Length: 323
Image (tube, rainbow, N blue to C red; front, side, top):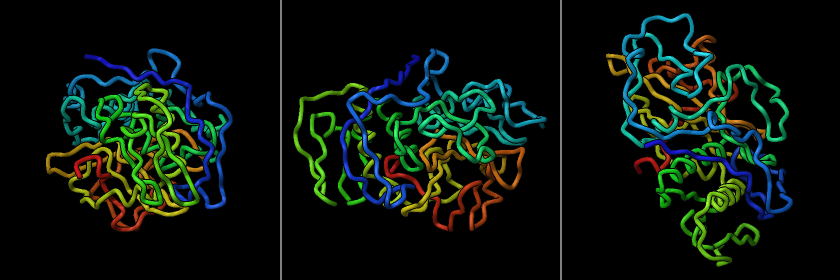
């Protein structure tokens, strides 16, 4: 069965003080005007819609793949189609409905697309990315590094109807869960203290879900996301894992795809949002310009990515994926 996510343009409306979190700088604040705030770069056509279909079996071309002139297929529309696996590696099969399967079929913007900021302008550094996800960006300098990961986690669970897993601690420790929001509760802030208050009736619409996400992004970030994650070994790396440094500012990048060779050694693609708020993107590997895959056998600390360096112990898994 094929399913779709259609991105709406109605986002959140709460005007709240930004806590020190995520990639945001400490003196930065965000305000929003009105109920209806358009999302930048939202998919407009059927071809740009995300599909969640089938199991994630290795394709025949990949099984027999040899050395290629390029690991990037400019004609590929999805993550899986855009990036070939390196010679000797095949994608690790994942069951139907897995987060990995969801990511592999996520629509990418056309090859060579620039990364756009939240205001529609181009990011200054256009040399760090290999591809751009079609995921919309909320208006305002809000959807930065941890926020992009929070959004893609949440979009997946919302699509699967697994609402109970959509829950994130804010930087003050308060657990902001989507089921409570869906039931009609809303967040009230008093300085650094937050609490629920009943505001309306139950509403499980996508518009209400986007308002929830937008509010989470205001109050959560790398500090809180780091506290929700536990260390993992690179030999067991999987889609959704992160290299993360909690701070203000901190940074995080997410594992978007994983492949393995006959010896069991893995390689992976990394994705990031960043500051100012910008589109989610597959980043390059500074060790080899023409090959965006990162290899477990090459992993050393400090771990260098195009725009951030991570220390040992930064590879972690969010508790929503198995903990």
